[in-house]
Structure formats: C-alpha cells, structure tokens
Image 1 (cartoon, rainbow over the protein chains, first blue to last red):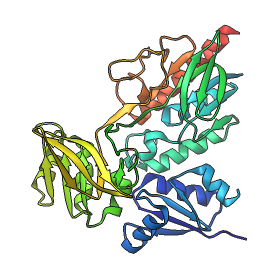
Image 2: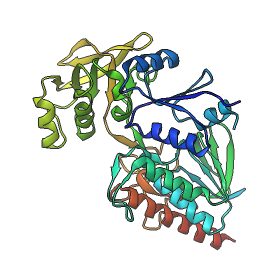
Image 3: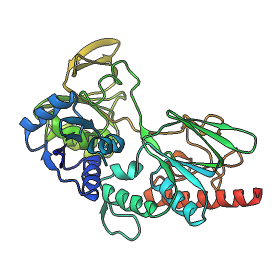
Length: 78
Length: 300
C-alpha cells in the first residue's frame, strides 16, 4: 500500500528542494506544505518534530528531520 | 583495498569522481552530503554553460552526472581521521574504516560555530545557520543575528520581512560588509544593532528563549526566540591531521594538488587555492584526480 508522505518546507531552502527532487525521482507521491505561507502548519511541524528546522518529512507518522536519505529510504521501504 | 578514496561530494569531489571513473580507477567516495556549498547557493550565473541555474539544480545535475558511473559511495558518513600507513592510507569514519593507495580531500567549508554553551543543544531548536531555510518559521518573533559581515547583513535583511524585531549582535565596533546592505539594515526601524557585543551563551528550555550577551564587561540576557549564526565559514580540514595547512586551516596544495604527504591530494574550498568558486573547485577536482591517477601509475 502506498504510504502517506508529507513534506514541510520553505520555498527558498535548498535541502527542501533536494528532498522533493529525490521523492519525485523515486516516484513517491507527497503533499507539499509551505510553512512560510501557513503559520498553523508551521506550528504543527514544530510540534510534531520538536524542532524548528526545515525540511521535515512525515512518512506514515514517522518523522524525518532534514534530507536524511538513509532514514527516508528506510521509512519508505525503498 | 581501493586505488583511491575521495572525501567529499561538492563540486570538487564530484568532478574528481567523474575523472577517476573515466580513468577506470577502483575508488570510494565518502561524504556527509551531496552538492556541498553549491547545493546551498541561491542563483548561479557564472558556471560555464548555464546562463542561470539554481544551486539545488546544479547540485542535482552534478549528482546525476556522477551516478552514471560505477563506484562505491558512503553517504551520511563523517571522516574522523586519515592514517598514513606503509604505502597506503587508512580512512576512519564514524561508522567504519577503509583503505586506499591514494586519497583526495575535497571536504569544502562549513559554517563557523560560535563555540558557546547551548549552541549544540539548541541547533534547530531556534538556532540556525541558514536564514534562507529556516527564517520563515520565525514569523512575528524576536530574533538575533550573530555576525557583522555580508552574510549576517543578508540574514538580517531576510528576517526584517518576517520577524517582529531583529537584533544584530556584532563583536566589532561597527558593522562590516557592503555599504549598500549595511545602510538598509541600519535604517530599518525593526533592527537594533549591538556593536562591541559578544554572544556568550544560548539560553532556553525546549526551544530557545534568549541569549547571553557581553558588552563593556556587563553581561545581559536578551529575550529572543530565534538565533541565526552568520560568522563565516571554516575549512573542513580538522580530520586531516598530519597535513600542512595555512593559518586559516586551509590545506596547502601545489599546482598539481599535491599536499606535503605523497599520495594525499586536496582540492577545492578546503585548500589554499586562490578564489573559492564553483567552477574553480570543479577544475581543481579534475586536476587532483588526474594527479592521483599519475601517482598510482608510477607506483605500479
């Protein structure tokens, strides 16, 4: 079954762009949330991840902070 | 044992890999990230062949170019030491150790840290080295930018649009950087510039609540929810212990990218090469790989 993937990011952050490139290259569908435009979602991200850096990737409840390819792959099972 | 280990995968390390692959060397790349500082750059307009490309796009093109070749790669791995053995090197990382007949250090530069209590604990908990990335999370909050050069001014200008108040904590008697940026920052009513001021600690609980500052022998607490550290870059050369470096910590190389240790080469921003540019780092990476190839051939 396809896992639900959410990326919390800002438009200007280089590693956010890299994460999204990586997901697209691996044909992973994801919801892209721009936390610079939505402060409620920004608070949600801070609460979920316990920190204030972007990107944050949520994969079926698993939280990955930063473009940590190993963790993302492991969580996605690819 | 590998012929060659390349440490780093920024413009220098990636170009070295492309050349090493085309020389059919048996090599390993060890790196924390891919793209290095190029991946962090905004708009690039001086890399030949591209009138305009963004940092992340160029990094991604570098990566796919490199990945069309077959070689071993260890990502998210930090090199801790290079030990010179009898005719080969042992490269120790935080996970394992690897052996090769030659090594290219292309580990680039990293953000300089303040080195004060609380800095490590509150990294990403209000403390950031990238205003471009994390700045938007500090909407309507009070933040401090530590530093007084162009990158600090840049960060302050970005934060003016987002934060409620911006304090610039500058260790020098006046701000440095370009006049045009400095004037914009100094004129803005949201900004308070504190010159001759040292940041001595980062304070907080779960997240940052403030910083300790020292001015004219007087210590004060300043309440902020965000801290952006913009005090420049340092060469990532600490693990290369027996290698000759200049006073900035840059590895000294000659025009063939040789260091003082035979078989150990270096390339790009981690070296004392004149000018730090993506195109220069890439060129240096190719030179280092070709020099390493010659060195390996002579030993056969």
